Structure formats: C-alpha cells, structure tokens
Image (cartoon, rainbow, N blue to C red; front, side, top):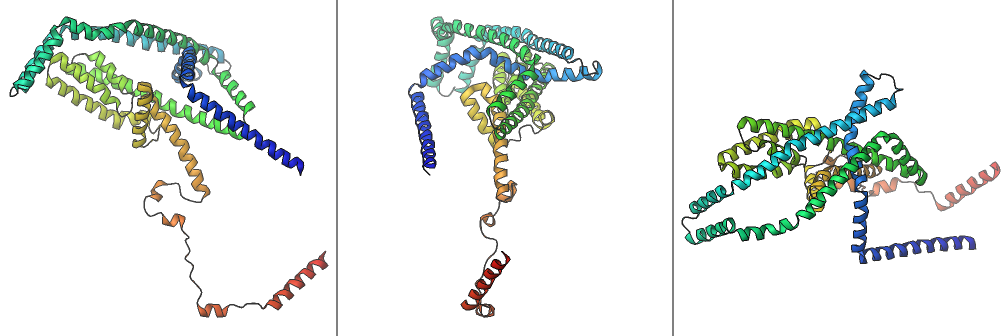
Length: 436
C-alpha cells in the first residue's frame, strides 16, 4: 500500500514539475518574444537554401517521375538499371527546369524594361489627357477643377517635388538590390540541394521513417505516416495542377491579345498567368493592373472593355472546363472555407500564403471531417450532412414513447409473494451447494 502511494505521489509530483516548467517557458517566451523572433529569423535565414531546396525538389519530383516511367517503359525495360535511369531522369529534369525559368526570364525582363520606358515616355501625354478629363468631368464646379489641375501640374512639372517623392524609393534601392541578390543566391544553392535530395530521395525517406519508428509508438507512427501521405497527395495535386492550369491560361491570354492587337502582350500574359495561381481572387489581381496598364498606354476605353471581356471569357473557360479537368476535386473544400483560408493566408504571409492557404485548409478540413465522421459512427449517427439540415430532435431524444400502464394491465401482472421468493432463492442456493 505504501509503495502504491509513493508511486502515485511521485507521478503527481512529476506532472506538477512539468506543468511549472511549461508555464515558466511560456512566460519567458512572451516576455522575450522579440529576442526569440530575431533568433527564429536568423535560423530561417541560414536554412533558406535548404528550404528552397525542399520546395524545388517537391516541384521537380513529378517531372522526374514521369521521365523515369517513360525510360522504364520504352528504353530500360529491366529494373536493374536504377542508377542510370535516375541519373538520366534527374539530368533531364534539371535541363527542363532551367530552360523554362531561363526562357521565361529572357522573354519577360526585356518586355518589363520596355514597358517601364514607354510609361515614362508617355507621362506628359497622360498628364494632358488627365487634365482634359478633369476639365470635362468638373466643368460645372470650377473650384474642384482648379484644385485638381493645380495638383496635377505640381506633381508633373515640379522636379524637386518628384525627386522628394522618389527619394524613399531611391534610398531603398541598395537594400532591395541586396535582397534580390540574396534571394538569387538562396535559389541557386537551393537548386543544388534539390539535386542531392532527388538523387537519393528513397534513402532520405527511409531515414525519416526509421527515426519516427524509433521515437514514437506504433499508433502514433501510423497517424504521422497518414498525415504525411495525405499532405503529399493534396499539395502535389493542387500545386502542380494549378501551375499547369496557370501556364495554359497565360498562353491563351497571349494568343488572344495578339489576335486582338492589344499592347503589352507578354507582360500582361505573365501577370495573368502568375496571379491565376491564386484561387478565386487571382483573376481580379491580374486583370485590374493589366487593364490600367492598357488604359495608360492607349487611352482607349474600348481596348479596356475588349480586354475585360476577353479576361472574363478566359476565366469562365478556366473555371468551368480547364480547371476541373486538370485539378478535379483535389481539395474537396467548400467555397466558404476557400475564402476564409485566402483571407487568413494572404493577411499573414502575402502571396505565398494565398497560394498555400487552400491546400493547407483542405488538409485540415479532410482530417477534421474524418475525425467527426468517426465520432458520429461511434454514437451510431449518420455522417451525411444532409441528415442534419432538417429536424434533428430525433437524434438526441428517445425514439420509444413509454406510456403508463392502465389499471387492467396492472391487475394482470402476477406478483410473487415475499415468502415464495425467499423459498425459491433458498432452493437455488441449495442446488448450487450440491453441485459443488
């Protein structure tokens, strides 16, 4: 008994010490949050090449797998050439990735520079057109007209004011340039890391599995492997499908704008294609600045209307035909949760957050839906949502309505007298004694 009490008190003391330690750590974390945040930023900055390597390996892996399947099917039909197949497929994947990115930069960067040059060359023309527009719009209100025209003339003709406006931007050029150089360095190092990851990906996966099995219990390991498998499935199908879908939309935009004779074909096609990766809001993010660029370039509302109708038609084609055929039901996420995930992801992490918000939310939604379905099954309740739309009172009330017995029914019940019940119990106990 004493040993039992000692064990109980020692276990309780351990739990109390753990709780106190966690509370102290939380207080220190909140008190020194800025220090912890700076430390986390430094650690993430050091690991950025590894992070980029993981991202690039994740995006390049489907391409490498397709090349390997092709090689095994048509060239190396025997499975004893794994190293050769891996080397060839990885090399072709690297060449393909470098060609796509390099070609895109080769085409886009000169177009962006030409667009910026054209915009600065046409500033005086746009100022004149803007002045005429203000005069026509506020011809009945001379006070507002004079103020707006004075403001336009001030910002367009006063060189010192223009320099003061551009001064903060000029001060940040060095910082921005250093950030760009650092980003390029991390991407290049990440590309090298991705090559090493893909070259021995089976070994890396096996090592991770070995560590997990060594540390956790079997039940916990099954949950971890399930989460990893589901995450890989959802993120791969969504991101790769969305990239292919956006590339096709960019090419369709390029072809349509070329046929219609609209300006800035390449840069607008790239903007529309890149922003199309963002679900739901992507088309608006791409169409609004593109329409403004066309308006500033041509000063023609007709071209803006034609471009808007073209984008609307392309997005309808994407949403109803192209997108479902490529992505299918890769997320299984209701529209309201798509909106909520985009608001949260975009507000916290910007463009990257909006891209990753939907598959992340889809993953959490899938796990929560499975957990809720299992709990309902344990309670012998249906898991279909349509069953809970109408009246649900029958789920938590007794199905049988018991009525009190009538007087006649009570009279028909035979109640054994107390003496007889004692005799029955006595003889049953005697029979048990004889059997022993």
